[in-house]
Length: 130
Image (cartoon, rainbow, N blue to C red; front, side):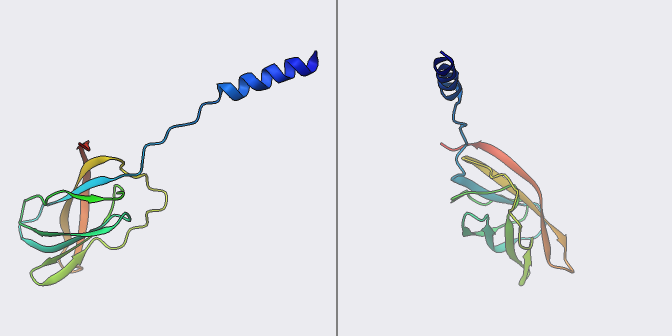
C-alpha cells in the first residue's frame, strides 16, 4: 500500500511540473538614433549577436533597421565623426538580458569629444517583429 501511495505522489509531482518557457534570444532588429548635432559616417554596431555597418547617420536622425541574431540593452557602437573614430567602448555582456524578438533603437550621443567617447542614453523597445 505504501508503494502505491508513493507511486501516485511521484506521478502527480512529475505530471505537475511544467517546463518553463523562455523567450528566444532573437533575432532583434536594431537601429541607431544620432542625438548629436554633427553627421556620423561608417556607423558600426556590435551586439554580441553580430557586427553590422549601419552606414551614415545625419545629425538628429535614425538609421535603418538591421537584423542581428541577438541584442542586449547595451552594444558597442563606433562612428567616424569629423574624420575621427569615436566609440562607446567594448561591452561586457555577462549577466545582461537579451532584448528578444523585437525592434529596438539605441539613442546615442557624444559623451566626450576629447576622449572620442559615445554613450547610449537609452535603449527603446519599439515593437515586436513582423
